[in-house]
Length: 317
Ligand SMILES: NC(=O)c1ccc[n+]([C@@H]2O[C@H](COP(=O)([O-])OP(=O)(O)OC[C@H]3O[C@@H](n4cnc5c(N)ncnc54)[C@H](OP(=O)(O)O)[C@@H]3O)[C@@H](O)[C@H]2O)c1
Image (cartoon, rainbow, N blue to C red; front, side):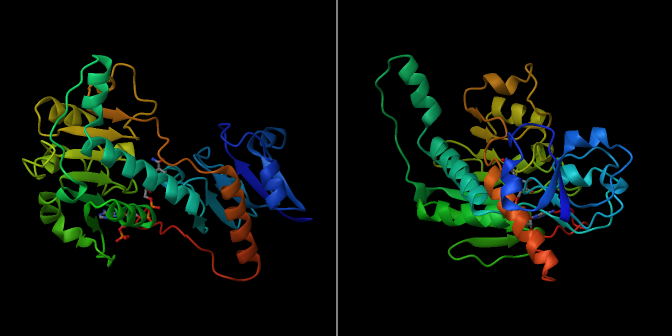
């Protein structure tokens, strides 16, 4: 018997575990719920895949060699303070990257093309046109130029937007003005549409707040700055977003992630017209792609090759 994999996914996004059995033939695939039948025997599990594992669960697996995250982000995994000091591989896949770029491009176009305004007009059966700037008149600034941010940057360029990007270390991307950590204020001053694609770390917690929004341009070709976030909700201060929308500092927002998920019923965000909200679905991990990715990394590991997409636990992403 080849070494086994624990699939620690408590919500049913994957339906069943057959895809893991298919991608990893000859291996025992242990479902999280099977653990209840063997609470004191977690030996023989060499690989574990999780999203938000129970605190301390992975630390009780004596034979664990590699941990996998179900998503691109690993903040949920790193919340477990007793996570073993073992390689942690995050999910990177073309389907995940493309889905995120689709969502980002869609949101930029929604605001560029004044979609909320025309939706309201349709409800009122109102036939009225409004001045329309070009994509090339707008500067989109992406915070986070990793796998997702750099793909979104390339696709926004193809749509004609001017694209700037900000990351901890300076990047070189064709046609994109890249800023590093020390140049945040210059970067913000030229972001008509600000896009958040940052991982959640101590440095990025609460980063999208009133003092950051104050540094965005006062006027833009679409009547004010737009904020779009698909990174993590705890990077944004929702009270500040609501105030900024109410006092006109922000013209509109698109949010896929929230401080608390699901977004509480009483949040004023639900009812703000130029706030486009989606329930953390900008880029959901595709189950087949995830199984193929995990199988591929296990194969590499067992062949003595370096694992890919390793998380640096010091930076937290
Ligand atoms: N809403 C959804 O459905 C969804 C789906 C997937 C992922 N996500 C989120 O998207 C995030 C980004 O994913 P990814 O694969 O693109 O991550 P990634 O490849 O690790 O890229 C992260 C980027 O953020 C930058 N960064 C991190 N900390 C920073 C800081 N303190 N200051 C400035 N820049 C900083 C990094 O800078 P360097 O390049 O200099 O390291 C890098 O460019 C994930 O962590 C996850 O939270 C959301």
